[in-house]
Length: 515
Image 1 (cartoon, rainbow, N blue to C red):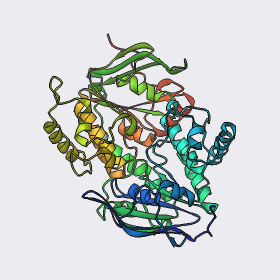
Image 2: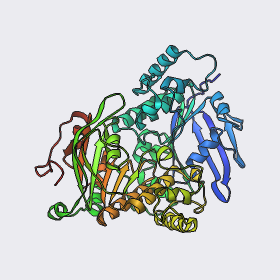
Image 3: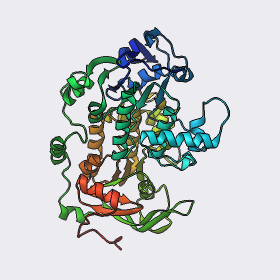
Image 4: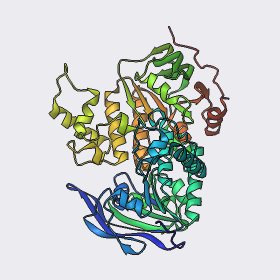
């Protein structure tokens, strides 16, 4: 039975934890202490070892060296079942749901005794409401948007009545209001005597909610401090191993955001931009799902060479269907679409839609087919191409033969983006480009997108982070209940358009596809 520890008592202690993957040392003597009644933020660059360390705690990996204590007693977690039995739960960055099952059925998995659908559904509603999350217990997981799947994972963990909850990038796919509610819930959950380990790249979130902060750098603990005694600059410097911080987190504050925008996001003059050819175009396009519901309603859009169009939306507004029409992955139900032969596409769920996780990186690079001649693949050429891409996009991996699953989420994202950029040709469509990335990797991805824009590519970006949309885009659109509306390039205006459907539309917005 799980019992509550006195507030302030050390629940979990890790000392000298070391773990290697082949020749790569993911953890190098890492240490951590988590107190009851606290939110403990675990930070670090992509590949710093954060998730690996928590996988040791949750029983998914075994440390080769070091000690773990739970409630003062030495312990080794041999499996996730061991961890759950002790009151330790984990919400993974990438989903562990069974797509063909309902929300209630997924949450019931791993439980004991018979499955009572009504009882489980009531439990889901209760836990979701307590967490400030909206979740339909009867919905099939494969029909849910990514944000709702993330909420299902969170509720699944909370339903186990855990004392220590590990959250790996929990706000990455949540809308801003949802993220705020989740952070508020974390605070209440910890104040009730429980504990949270929050793995995040969002420094603002960490400092807003955390009591304690630990920073890993190349598998080592380089900073442990009460959150009240530090700031973003110090934490960021620790994440970089003490190096000077040259970039600001997206959305950190208005001054740094405006400065970055002025310095890095200067698009082409209007007269020049409107003279460039239209690469992507939708004219009164609608998309209807299998249940007869219109997810996209008469959307009209033109994207020219050499511009980034940003889209903001709350989850379920139709943005995912719209992006897949633009990327050629889905056909419109009505209306007219004009797209080039090849469109690069970076989906937000890279595990399900972009990677062969158990295949080497060079085989994942070959998925687009770029470099193949008449159907014949030169694997040595792909190895060389992959090695060059790893270097160009700073993908932290042992080499082109490394298995995709062994990379951190951020490095997987950079791999997918690099592959799609090289194969895209004239156009690129991206969902949540910085999901799971630290601020340094985010800056690198943003620079790559701007370079593609400046080289003449037409780029469409959707992000659940409104600051990211405004920062990157030359023009901004909002989706509201399936309707696409052009908005002023302002965070507040975009937010209002997303929520209400009221938008500021430019006078020169094209009405349709040029003949």
